[in-house]
Image 1 (cartoon, protein in one colour):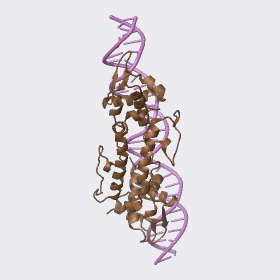
Image 2 (cartoon, rainbow over the protein chains, first blue to last red; image 1 turned 120 degrees about the horizontal axis):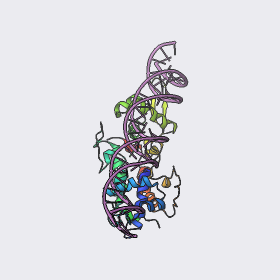
Image 3 (tube, chains in turn orange, yellow, purple, green; image 1 turned 90 degrees about the horizontal axis):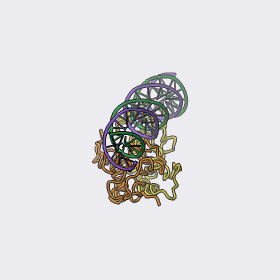
Length: 136
Length: 136
DNA sequence: TACTACTCTACTGAATAAGTAGACTATTAT
DNA sequence: ATAATAGTCTACTTATTCAGTAGAGTAGTA
């Protein structure tokens, strides 16, 4: 299950996608519209900025905005930043790979099944973008 | 990511699948072959028994064994018992559904994307069985 | 009846999740 | 210049889950 942090992050990105091109959006506006605790949201947006998904402007008339067009940012990218690995096991993660102790991946059946699952998930999350997070 | 508990559980089920039809298997044997802390493994096997995936025999010559043929037990079933929900969000879980607060699912774009992801994952996990957890 | 092996309750330490508080810094409008 | 605004950053806190352990109890078998 995704953490609350990730849910909030994706909701916020969806809102920013819907406002793309309209200039900076206040944290407080995002928090209000998406029912997210504002201080918690701050830390999430800051993280996304540090990872170059978002950009911001300080001072009056400031706020956060997408660093690129919604279509250009995949959900896989966003998820990896906020939540971490997409795969179900470290030994099948592409971006957060970690070898299993005492387990030969060449022979491990669990590894094979989880790699297949990862591929199916990734196929979707890499195709879908922030554009797809805009509520109808 | 799956918890260690789930990893251990699936490994153990894979081993029991490989020994299916050969009578009860000692917890200590599973623990040894799969490098699982024995006391931790006990609790996992007990859970699986309570959920009717496993059966056991006490006393000398006792141990754990699959309650049904490996082919008959899907990974989706096993995962739901040990790990919990397969979906990424409660509001798209089929077996652990929980409504989002302040969020209309009819309109929520995140909900739609996650439902698609869930379907892709489930398509695999429901087709794969404990048979597929037997190491080559 | 002794031995074996599963059953169950209770506990522990460490890590992560979820969120809060408050000081600080940069920008803009007046 | 200087308020007022709005993001930045550090440092907590509290609760829950994770991962694992200890030990007594119960049931079945030779």
